Every structure is written in C-alpha cells, then in structure tokens.
Image 1 (cartoon, helix red, strand yellow):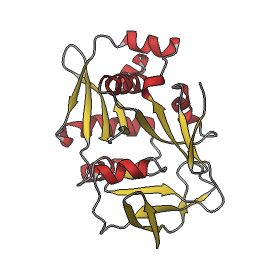
Image 2 (tube, rainbow, N blue to C red):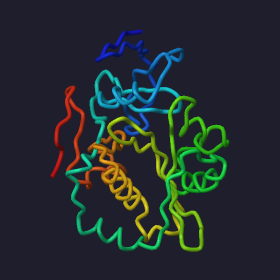
Image 3 (cartoon, one colour):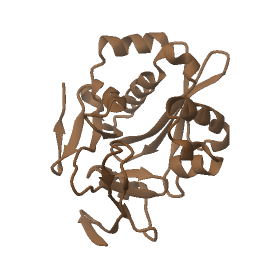
Image 4 (tube, one colour):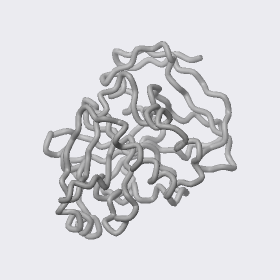
Length: 241
C-alpha cells in the first residue's frame, strides 16, 4: 500500500499482483488501484485522471509496470481540435444520425449491441461477454455520474453507443460500441468527433481517451485526432498537431 497526496486529496493506493498485459501479452503488468473502502466522486476522479488514472468499474487505476512505461494516458484539447479530411468525411456519412445524451441510461438495452460488438471485434476477450453483470461492472460504477450517448438511424435503430464519465474539465470516453454491419460509416471515429463537438458547445476543455501504446495497432486511431496530449514523466505533452 502507498499513500498518494494531491491538491486537497489524499488517497490510499494498492499495487496489484502481476498479470499478463492485455496489450503486450509477452509482458507482465501491474497497476495501482484505489482502496475499495475509499469514497470516490466526480471531483476526485477529475483530479486523478489529470495524473494518468482511469476508471474501470468502481475502481480508479493507473499502470505501474516495473519494466515498461508504454501505456500513456491520452486527451484531446477540445478548443484546439481541427478535423482532418478523413474525419470530415465521417461527419458527412453520418449526418442522418440522431445523437442524444441519456443521463440515466437503462444498461440492459445496450447489452446485445455491446455483446455482439465484443464478439466480432475482440473475440479473444471471452470473459467480457459472458454475462450482463460483467458488462455492468466493466462500464458503470456506483459513484460516477456515467451517461450514454445514443446514435440512431432515422428509423430509430440504435447503431452506436458511447459510455462517458463527466469530469469538471471535460469527459472521459469510457467505451464505444456499435453495430459492425455499419462499419462503412466509421462510427468509432464519428462518435469521438461528436463528443468533441458536444464538449465544445459546453465550453469544456478535454476529452480523455484512455491509454495509448505506440506499438499497439488497435490504438493507432487515437493519435489521429489532432492535437492530442499524452501524460508522460508526470506531465502532459503534445504528441502531434
């Protein structure tokens, strides 16, 4: 156990036992996680996410691997964002979608879409799609004010959902899943662009995209949003743009 002190914040953090890294399977991973007895809140999370932490279920954690520092927390400064030509095409493709924020989402109505997405996109993640309570425990928590953004066709068919946590300075993009039958719409890219747009309207500063590993091909899309910043050596630095 260690104690972590920040401005107006003192938390106990625990070092996890070793486990196989989900991003670099040949590596052994560790992370720091908050004390299960600790009372958490949006304000506490808003501080910790600025220090490279991330919510998983009801816990907040940060990689703390002994011989690897490749996991870098990523965020997009909303006010400085400039869409590329490819990203603008994604906006055009999806102009017909109805986008709506759901502040108190019914988790159960998203499970089938989520489960089908995981089976199709991440078939190696068997443990993630074995029960609806696993889905709930992965995306939601008992202390966060987590909300959903729904993307629907004119027919009202739900084709994409983004799960987000509100912060004092922006949003944390927890997870996005979609109907892969509409892969030509680039819904993953579109969802991030809409989150940036919605944050801009609310005069909020950052969209946090979780962790990025330069050598992990599945994460390459994150740095296509410019400019973006990474938390490394205990500071945020510009990675592109």
